[in-house]
Length: 176
Length: 71
Image (cartoon, rainbow over all chains, first blue to last red; front, top):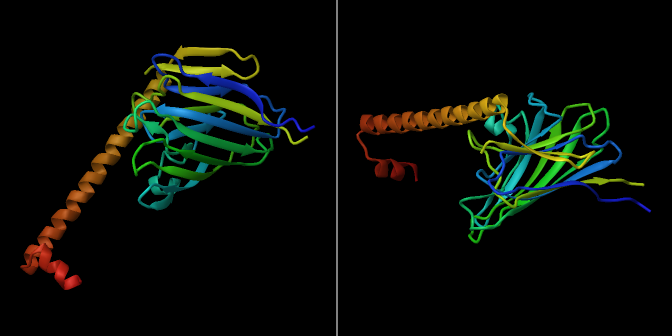
């Protein structure tokens, strides 16, 4: 029977929040990875890096929409350093409805192959207003090593912060 | 916020540790770049607005009159 969606690890941010969430020593025994997020941060975007690679080895494109309209852009819209991470858009922030958390999922197929890795990311901000956003994103990391770590950091300056009760759960998927 | 959370997926061990000096420096660099980008965008917008105002003055028309011409 297929051994799908095995929980590898889960993190719940405690009192005081956290500047970053890192999954390390990810085993290579699955075919795909799936990261589920429920977050509230101090920026609408999260930076996602694999294997601590902070080089210009990432590209991404996203489609954004809210109650008023839609548009798309990519890492080239923003230039450097937005080519040094995948961008996980539309996290709930302190400007969204109090005590709400965004939902997000990142799926990385074939994360152990020795070629570049693709990823799909989707997310919705929970906000009781017409400007609640949703985002669908594609991403590419040119690293050829198996993914063994995933780091998440809010895209902000000196004080990136995940709010208490934000959660991140990493699943491994096997196709056999 | 100076705490990072790491979970070791092999052992399940969760570590909450202070940010390293390199990580703090990286965050400060991000903030500095963001501020520089903001200032550059602001300067560009101000330059464009001034150029527009100068052109209107040169033509001797108002912004509303310019809109009529372009409508």
